[in-house]
Length: 396
Image (cartoon, rainbow, N blue to C red; front, side, top):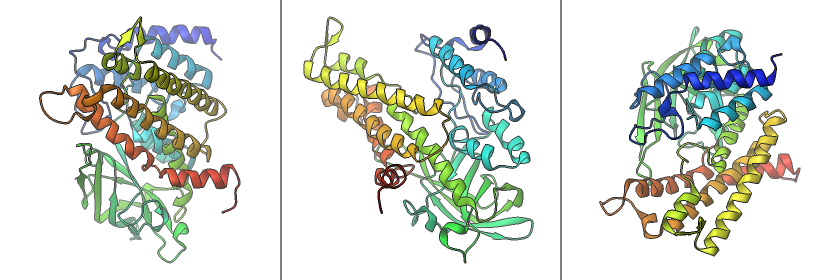
């Protein structure tokens, strides 16, 4: 095994040579910032965003623990820690945001065939394909197993008909991983399969859903006589519920990271906003009461981060503890945004008009968006039920 100090030197040298200037902290603020999702439809305001994605993807470092044979970095836990430390040291931006990385790749590694892993994992890691999730339906949210989108066996393919809802960024995605009903006569949990569908297939269409935040990351997705090859079935026929639960646990672990200030769109520093709007004296937030609230919040965030890291160091496998992290992380993220809104005073209700700057308007929208954290990936009430039954062992 390579000496860790040698590995650190190698990583530092590679980052110095390959991480573009605008992808580091201290970059020129006039350079456009991209939220990089990759995929066939991707557009880049800053060309260096694409360069950074390509270099990290080719290295396999967007998913550093995945074996090299599937396009990953093949690193062990100690090496990943070093990579993260060195990226943090230069303020390297995240090269790729991806539901494929956060949710689909882990279940492909566990349930996919060798052919499926070699087909899909390299494209996920390089950001060549952008994925979305097809779980919820108009009549099947918390009771997901009641879903009715059906996939009929037509010999060499499935014929899919139905509708999904709250499919994040479906209008921008290339493929969707979806739960479909393949066993209409079986008990509801036993007749579900996990299917991969190309969004460019005839019969697939999407329609954005407008939210109170003014943005529309969510869509309705429709399947009208969509032909899906049999080789796109992950796992066994009618055994998709086990995969669904595993993926939900990975999704919940991802959403919980919002509580660490590291989730999508969370690049807002609570202390800096408080100093700007509340005021500061001798480098401290001037209002003692508000300062104590932020200190308490930061202490809890640090404790949560250490607990989150310890869980990953102990194996990081999907389990019911993901519900604990999801519940706490989403509530903590909501609280952070409430503190930021409180600090900005009247600017906390910024929406339109020249009297508010863009930063204030974006913060208002981000605050409203956090309300969805306790719904997506399973509501907080669902997480409490999971914790009570599977973690605490309480009776139903």
